[in-house]
Length: 152
Image 1 (cartoon, one colour):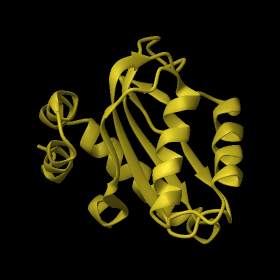
Image 2 (cartoon, rainbow, N blue to C red):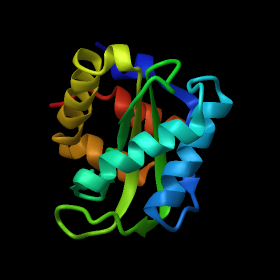
Image 3 (cartoon, rainbow, N blue to C red):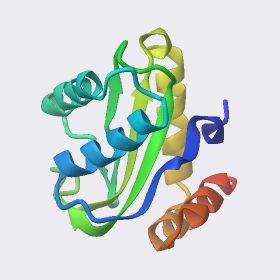
Image 4 (cartoon, rainbow, N blue to C red):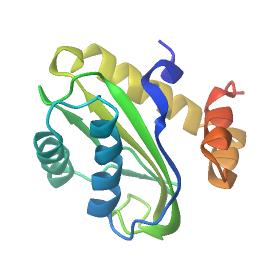
């Protein structure tokens, strides 16, 4: 599996001005919906909110990986936001988040594809060079280039 096949640059925000977790998720879901990845943005948002209510998706290091698995998803996709200012995400390390990967997962992909996407993102985030490149990214192209880097 290649993470890149699930990321469309139209679903990326390189300088996201959101000031809250909810606003960030809504902006990314709006891109996913506008670009044909969702049947129903509201139902998808409800699934993401339900997941967030169980446990934070702020994994630390300034990164959050919220996700929703629902029939409201037309095409399994990953939306990415680089936040202009850190947002409180109740992250495990209690630090603000400035990089968000929102996973929109079809119900049929809920088991296998969902876990593989999380695994691939996690592997990339274990590489200090990739993480640094992501945090320094100023454009969607910069983000894509960072995600194309091979973990060392």
